[in-house]
Length: 265
Ligand SMILES: Nc1ncnc2c1ncn2[C@@H]1O[C@H](COP(=O)(O)OP(=O)(O)OP(=O)(O)O)[C@@H](O)[C@H]1O
Ligand SMILES: [Mg+2]
Image (cartoon, rainbow, N blue to C red; front, side, top):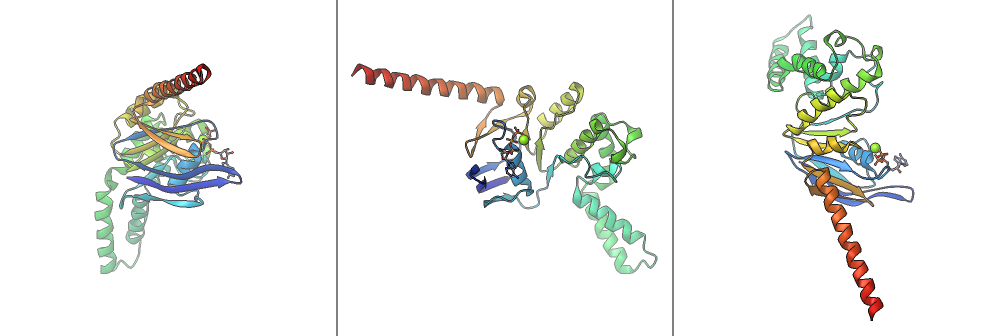
């Protein structure tokens, strides 16, 4: 679970969030919606820790791993495509390098052997032995062909960079997945693949998208960012949209009736 507790954030006089309290639960996919500039991207950045709120905090269940779709296409310029994906699972990446550094030592002690053994164990538990082939097949599913996997990020076109960064976020089955506009730059076929992937995903997904069809296909819930608050609703985007239209019609009708009553008196 990931929870926002009393999150308040203002930029000057503009209050983006005022005491927002919300829980996101395993198995649910939340479509984060709201007007342009409502604060959707900012909220995801607060959850990931990239932005510090003025007040409140974010809590994540112990041991859960969060992955974020990175927005900076140049961050991994000097890494190969495949390594960029592997880096999405930071602990796995660190263990792999710590282990390799020990094996590379000229004076390999008994203590080194013990440490290497421990790291091998942890590496195996995290699915380390299948990591490269899993990363490779994710890339291929997202339309990044095998001949590109060992190329440096700075040497591939930006239409492919967005796919690699998406593979990086999806890699290794994160417990919490934060995606801001993941369909940008994708073709219809890849969007379809991503829809299937997310519709079957069993952990927590928060996704911002302006693509209603995409949201309808994947979301179990809607998180509506509106007037400094965030409210969650069960159901997909269309269900939220129709219910909110119905509610505002009912409020209008009621107001009209009250007005007529007042006039009649
Ligand atoms: N660092 C900042 N300093 C001041 N204002 C900011 C800052 N970052 C964002 N804002 C403002 O906060 C508001 C929310 O921005 P944010 O990007 O989170 O909106 P959004 O809901 O993601 O919008 P969009 O649908 O256009 O992506 C905007 O009015 C934006 O101009
Ligand atoms: Mg945004």
